[in-house]
Length: 124
Image (cartoon, rainbow, N blue to C red; front, side):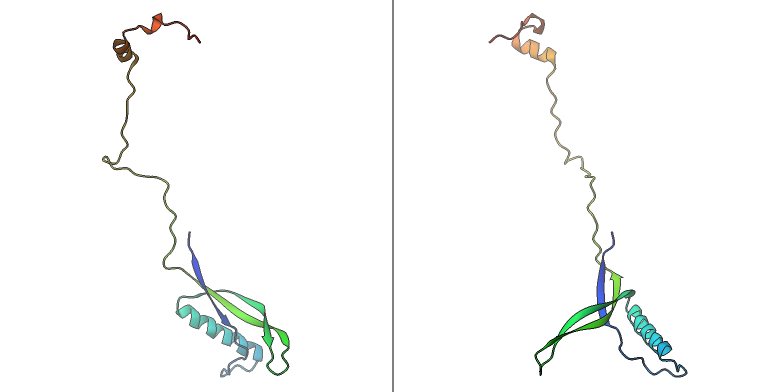
């Protein structure tokens, strides 16, 4: 399973002056393209853009106003990806558990000296 790390930057508020582009919408689009390409050169993939509220406090009036900031979110695959542990356990010959064999019925008959067929039901 791949894990990602994320990076957020503020979207540019003004379009850069670009030679040959006169429309403000096209200039802003080219400015965004330049920002995204600059981040992708460092290995970041454009993920999404969000507008999030931020409370700002005015120093003079001491009032809090809500303002929205446009953020560009980038991500890249974490270099140290997490690997899930495998469920299979491989044991070496030395590490294998001991196998204990149960004595057979014939061996018990010789030790006790009583035949199993001659025993009756259990009594209290």
